Amino acid sequence: MSWIDIGALDDIPLRGARKIKTDVGCVAVFRTDTDEVFAAMDRCPHKGGPLSEGIVHGQSVTCPLHSWVFDLNTGQARGEDAAITTFPIRTEAGRVLIDSLQLTGRSAA
Image 1 (spheres, rainbow, N blue to C red):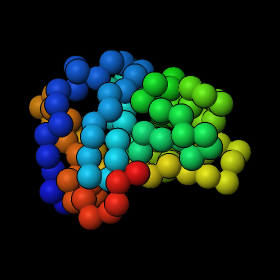
Image 2 (image 1 turned 90 degrees about the vertical axis):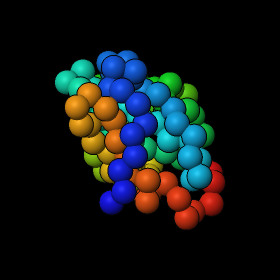
Image 3 (image 1 turned 180 degrees about the vertical axis):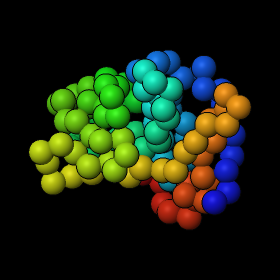
């Protein structure tokens, strides 16, 4: 893995997200109320809703358009045969790092 710094943990609101633009498209970086971070494509496969504008609850996010719920660990939609792509991410000394190798080499969404 090749980790890159994408910002401070405090720049992501609790139970919220920030969007970053990458070679593979927009990626939502989520922060839970316990300061866990997750990263996933910012597009719901159902109707294309911006997941970065969804509601973060526990380790899940709810799409703001049609209320599909996605597990941020696996990307799987609850009760649906659909999933979002997730990306390796971690925090270190208050900074958020994402694996840059997963953000290149594919066509943009």
